[in-house]
Length: 202
View 1 (tube, rainbow, N blue to C red):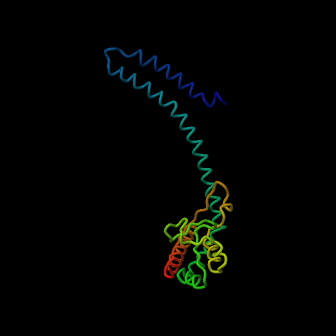
View 2: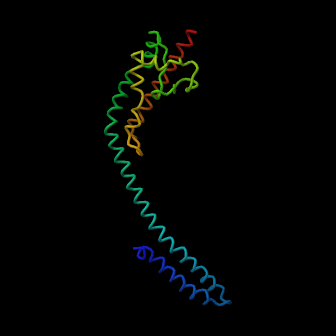
């Protein structure tokens, strides 16, 4: 198998050696044109031999990449079939809510709480700064869980755990991209209103 795989290298070497005998010594010192042709032809074959090997390697790698791409598309299609309907329902629920009215209802019920784009992370879109904002209560996550509106909305606005996605693959679809946009827009407006209410009372 080794000899078959690399036989063209040996044949190429033999051709190159024969050409060197024919073209290089055959050129007279007075015939500059022939000499130039002889010199140029040898490098042409030197380049041609490894190019054939590189093309074979490229086809093998390209074939592997195509199989991997097909697998990624297959897994993503399965994830879309599983998760798209869930996020479509979430989008409908979020869009049915008014973040301004929700923030007012939470605040005037006696709770000051800000929503996060990631469950458990202090990433509060709509606030400046979004991370470690000094105006966010230290017990913000406790406050979120205590109020039914913020508790339900916080769970609704966050994506499912990454562990639900097979390692090495991604879930991508127009639905999940739209969900992220709708969720972020709600969080920004809710947090801006909550902050405005907080500042107004100071």
